Amino acid sequence: MDCPIGGQVRVTESAAEAVAGDTLRLSTDFTAAPAGCQFWQGGHEFTIGGDPGVREQTVVVIAGLFEHFSIKGTVTGSVDWQLAGRSDSCGIDLVLTGEPNLSGNEPAWAGTLCDHGVNLEVQSVPGTGG
Image 1 (spheres, rainbow, N blue to C red):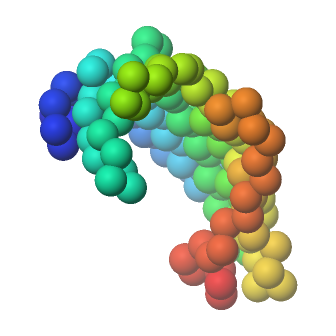
Image 2 (image 1 turned 30 degrees about the vertical axis):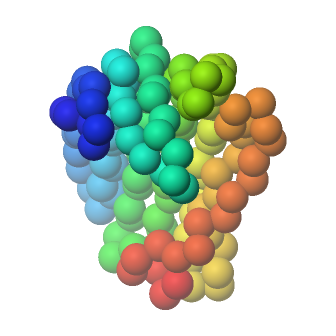
Image 3 (image 1 turned 45 degrees about the horizontal axis):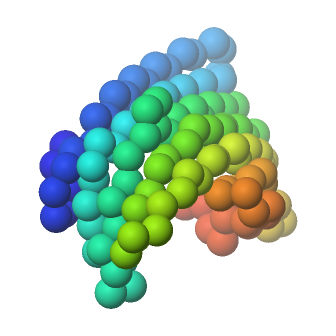
């Protein structure tokens, strides 16, 4: 896939579903490996690269008519970045967990992003009353 200003991102993806009784399990696996990918953000031109890049794996389980709904996933990897003569690497190690329900228990991402601890709540998941 072409990047906005130049370079490319190699994307691989797979998805699978499995049904057992009244339970549906959806699994996804995406990898993005940027190579000289250039884009503008906040008035600055960035270039990113990375091998292997970033991998996102997610599993969603739905039982009955949304009587139980859970989501678990990970985002791992690393990208190298360049900006105005500066450069560094940004490691990514995030875990997504949650069992959204009508009482407001929403999924959250937690882990590290570019050597910073993060804990992000997902504000709303479609179909869960949020």
